[in-house]
View 1: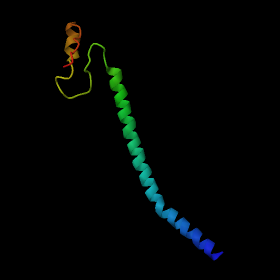
View 2: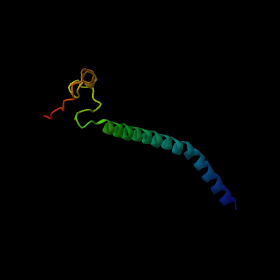
View 3: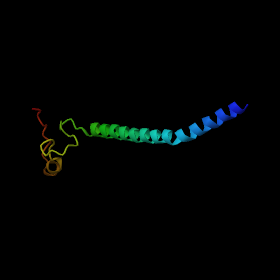
View 4: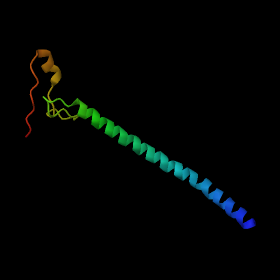
Length: 85
């Protein structure tokens, strides 16, 4: 009976010591999960913003990657399709 109680105490002590480690790993997993969900959400939002008349409407910081559609809407000119290559 004494051996059983000693093993029980050792098991509880080990569980207590590993608890912060498990919660830390879970927090990292949740943080990674949020990043993945955020990336997936941003990806689908970008796909929804694609216009069939403008092929390169990605959220890029390159001035040559997309047309300035704000000015073309005010003048009444139609959007020009960007040719690849």
